[in-house]
Image (cartoon, rainbow, N blue to C red):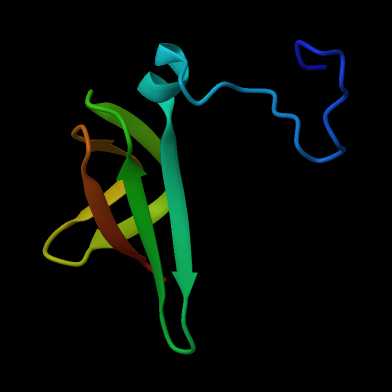
Length: 85
């Protein structure tokens, strides 16, 4: 309910506050793009601190090397991978 006692409509309530410093600190995203012949994983760090993100598999960097298990990503950075088959 808001300050006037009006209920929020269904589907508009949230269980988080995007302005909360803890939420901002730990916000991470893994976004996948699946194409017809390839699959890529984009790992994004939306906060300013370096974080470690579990990947659950072996992935190859698009530029060089590979990573298994988890990846360390600096603040406000993104890494792009392809799964190793």
